Image (cartoon, rainbow, N blue to C red; front, side):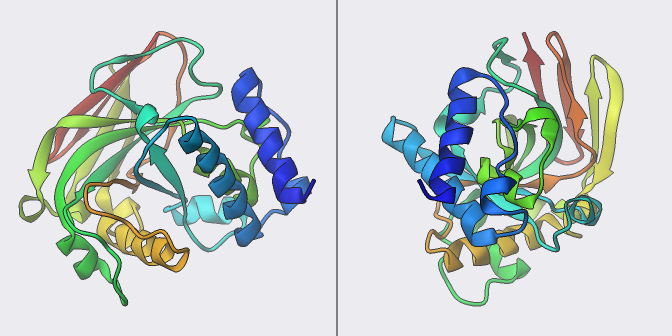
Length: 258
């Protein structure tokens, strides 16, 4: 087996067996971008072949502090599939996730394809139909979250599930960089932040993703959802926790863990 194939097999087995595995950086390296995304593509392709449908992307590593921690100078992205979406206010079944953590984000719903040259923040914003408060429930198939850049990208950017709020706001009625976020767990504030924590402006994060996705031959399409990146620190959660995020101008979004 090639290194990529071995990494795919390791991560796929961890997901199937519900048992975290060792990191895959021994196979594909810590910072080999091409190898890491090759593993991600194979894992996503397998899930699509099994019946899942691609509905968007998520952007990760949008904070400079996290990039420094992992020794990289770029964000990353993962693929959102329809079976990853959880309804606002719903309960995640016990055992669905391995090592969940939650972060609050601005999500965008695209009205147009982003398949053009020279995509900047303004052009990316023009393609947005609406914005919505969201929770990203990140998870890692890798034991104890012992991840490098290569590990998290290969593991679909440590994706788990996502929740979209019920209140959608038209593009022209919100300035994502100016929003303020407060996320609570069981009624206690656990994370706060602003839109500027996401690469200075969530539209900048969207533009980065649009350029990168196009370069990799799989551009963003109308109707897709993009989770633009965390507005504040992620928080580990456990069975029984209730998580609610309030994002100014976008309203609230919540989820419960059984």
